Image (cartoon, rainbow, N blue to C red; front, side, top):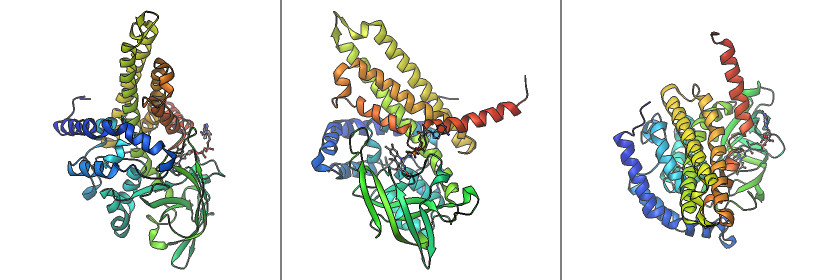
Length: 408
Ligand SMILES: Cc1cc2nc3c(=O)[nH]c(=O)nc-3n(C[C@H](O)[C@H](O)[C@H](O)COP(=O)(O)OP(=O)(O)OC[C@H]3O[C@@H](n4cnc5c(N)ncnc54)[C@H](O)[C@@H]3O)c2cc1C
């Protein structure tokens, strides 16, 4: 592997970093003060659109879409995108500034890859322009949704429409004021083979029959402005042309969606871990206890050194997974994608935990971004599939592979 950035990536990275320095870090505290103020619940921070306009004007826009998405893609490979996503990940709201934030990125990939021309005109183009946002509506409260074959929201044909009935929860972005389209997964055929029962359909949030049952908190806070909520669908009528790809093809779409989305989360987790490590080192160098700097305590040096090793290991594994996706496709790279989906957020959580400890009381406060990185990476270990599910599939694959390999 060659570790040098190409000229194109070095240039883009320098520009993303300069943009972050000039426009994102200086607004970080203001942003979080605004979204955490209960008076502003479910409202977008007023400075967001101006920052998006600047990023779009500078060509720092939609960088996530891999090179095989034709006219929609800026032409980067996953490997080229990795350092850019890491740089954006250092401030969690930054990816939205560059129109590179979840779940919009995964939804745009679905529409670019599987959407009809009409679906692309109506929803993909405004998503690519950043004028609307979207949600991915899969998880259900009454079934273990880490096994997506359990999902049971019904999608029943009736004349020119499908009629949706069921419950969903943990839907990120559903509360966002600009969220105008949801991709909903449910069952069209309860009697088909297990992986041909489900479909994905486009639903507009203001369709009659949809109720927001309640807002969910994550570690005690509402994740405003996107939020997570529980939804009820009662006889929700959706035109048949909103079906993506065709009935029974929900799993095919889910597989296509999740590879890139998962690795993007990992890249951002590494950005957060790297930043927590840097903040930890600076704090250790400036704080004196029992007559010497924390940085001169052996245990603190160990924490910094271990964190450095772990960030580097996770970054290399992420780059290897990204390279495998580019060269061999997401299907062949699924072992590396599963590995990094488990490794990166756990690593980030561990590094943030050490950084919190080094800061003492300040570590759990909102005075540094570390506490928020810690909680974010904790839930990333559940969202997009819990760690155990990825490990189980990875273990099964590796056992089969090594059993069938030549014995040496
Ligand atoms: C902050 C946040 C945002 C989210 N955003 C979205 C969203 O936008 N859209 C959406 O549809 N969903 C979203 N989710 C939901 C998330 O994807 C699900 O919570 C996740 O897939 C797990 O499903 P579940 O909650 O039903 O857990 P279950 O399926 O009930 O699993 C519970 C636990 O069982 C264990 N387990 C499961 N399978 C195995 C196994 N094979 N081996 C060993 N142990 C196992 C794991 O420990 C797992 O955590 C979000 C969740 C969170 C917390």
